[in-house]
Length: 121
Image 1 (spheres, rainbow, N blue to C red):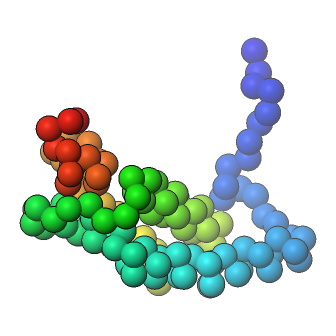
Image 2 (tube, rainbow, N blue to C red):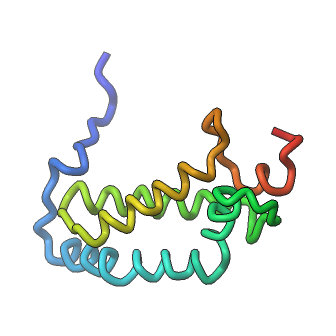
């Protein structure tokens, strides 16, 4: 049985409508940098840094802060799949390195649980 919807791969589509072209440019050059800057300012990235450093710091922000960071990172990867951007790629690689270093040896990653409730895994 075929799926009801068939979704195209991100890198195999090309948007030509000016509304969407302009919107994606705004996402790439304004919204994405702003979001990443806010994650630094709010301390969301510090959660990953703390786990990587194993410094025992308490979790900063709401319990869903990891999800905001990870979904933004996924969006950045989607943008890279459509158009190469060496600067963005380097930033994404650095974020992946940090996030991977924050994960437990078995791959578990939930900064709030790891920092505040390690015995509740």
